[in-house]
Length: 346
Image (cartoon, rainbow, N blue to C red; front, side, top):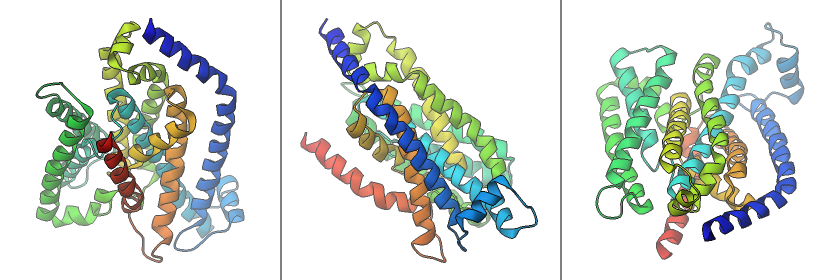
């Protein structure tokens, strides 16, 4: 009864604020579109908004600027927005299910597993079909997720947030060492994917985006569908079971969603860290803990954050370019340290 009353109070509060949260989603969508258009204008040579508009709605294949926008800049900004949304939502799902504020696909080693298997694929085959990037990234992400949960479940108390975090950090370091060894051994592969291994949107082309986007879109919609169940589990395992929820089924579906989101993001842009850590905390501070709102807000804010970080990667050291993963590390590392200190003090 206490659990039901708690959920009822939360639900009433959430419904009363629904009208105030809907404009926020609309504002976020407008801000995302503006960020995407702004990002398209920036590069080695800036392009005016008028030319961008013409390239999008009145394309001329003899115009060099139009060609650059359609073949290079548009795929890049779309990839950044989709990867940002996928990573932010995967982080929100993991934090909600595990009640672990440090949960993130990079910190828990999922991205490292996906990256290692993709690198292994490139080393073995040389030039694999684009469709295999996503498939092998999913395999690596799935194996890493199973290993982290298995390691974090050992000993007394089962899979606690601290044990899962430590297991993920250890596994990520272990797998990353093998990835580095493969790249050192094969210099040709290193030259091909040097930027990709630290997270990069440079050179993303439309064919790879079209191969990986469906998986991430399915994952995003799946997260929205189970968002109310995630809210219940985030209140506590006993609360969820007391309300008759099949927590095992929800966790299984959520694990598949996380693998689709994280694996697709790694296949497209490499292991970009901290988006899934930072964004859900900001969103929960803004809209509360109802994951029916946390999921869509995380998708929007994640897309905006990674798009802005990609802009920074292009303008900070012009005419050179930083991988977007490094820019996100500058943003996310201090946040992670502050969050870890707060968690330890509690």
